[in-house]
Length: 119
Image (tube, rainbow, N blue to C red):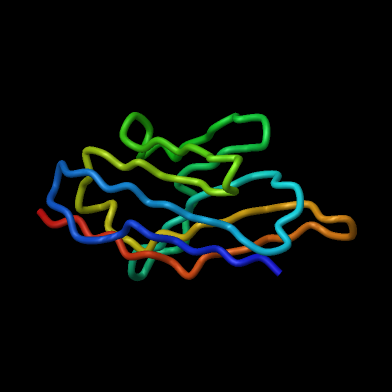
């Protein structure tokens, strides 16, 4: 079983920065992708950014140029550096890891961390 622990959320003013971290532990297997999603009140969960095993990164259009995802392979961790934050970035942010084990593909989620951007 895989455990994901997120940290780094909080309250920040418009234009500020935050850094989210997610550390995986347990029987992780071979990581395929590591992603950050977010869900604002009354909205569907959306993909914010992802990094694949070969280092390829993807971003939602709304965060391009402002957010940077990075992976610390040695620690099975993924970070999301968020800059130039806006009120519409306010959401619960979730870490997601898809990994391959001997017998299955595991899709694991963190508990979420709240990011609030005040205007």
